Image 1 (cartoon, one colour):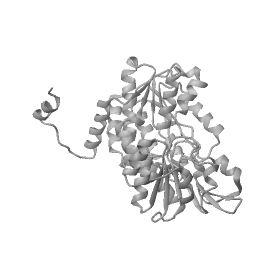
Image 2 (spheres, helix red, strand yellow):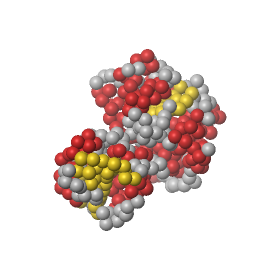
Image 3 (cartoon, rainbow, N blue to C red):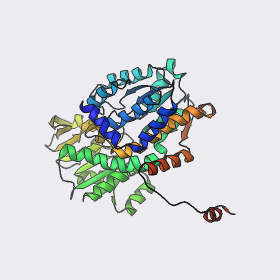
Length: 402
């Protein structure tokens, strides 16, 4: 019952996806299409799965992270005729088993978040790969993994880099993670942010959003970077820039947002002050190196739901949120509904684009076409009853004349 209420509440705040669902349903655009999904399984994701199912597709779904399934939502989703293979807190072995289960329907389309389904297809599921028309990838990490397959000439079908659409990364990564990461941190710790030293590792779109919200809470924000241009941008945005080596000694709260591994490891744990809080906003649980922390700790315990205290040999205590997994979903409800309304609209229309154009697409990673990106923005404005100006004929001529 509670899961159904969550799905209904999210649906009330997803006008853009609702309009797309109506069009899919009326035209049966996805009839006879099989779609396998690996996304963080909560109420907004449930509405995407329902929209695709109502458009005529056979849908199987699992979570893209062992800690980001909301069990009540997963149970409720089964009542819509969708095959669900997900449970919160499963082992890595069970997680891979569930990924295989969603691939057992022999999908035409893959909707992936982090690249695990696409990778599995190319390493273990050759029996299924021949059916795949194409895939849509939700996040930066997954796009990078897919590009690596392409670079090695191993990619077997076209992939739409949904993450790179302007309607996705400019909003989802910045405003979505910017709010939801702090929602997870504050909800879990109940500590005040104002006046604290917050260290944000990485100043991509996700890092920008996290730093911006931390500044708004009244924190003193330090950014660490490896890219000189992003570091310069963070500096121009008013943040202090330093190496993690120096930042480790100052931070009260650390948030990783790089998409890379071993961002905070033993080198930095040893320098941190007593009581430092560590959270990860990247897709995989590799940014805060938990193996190092467990190795140097003399003991650990859960002191509050989703907070593990690690006691170091000298008595200092470090607190890790959500086992170092994606903090906005491991410790909260993920991105705001309206943000995911926009992101999942990109997903849904990218699925339609693949079905219509797959015969003309090669086995490579494609950006979301610019006209589709702009069409989604127009649909968004229309759904929210926002009107904008249009260029006059004279203005168009002025901009296009030689």
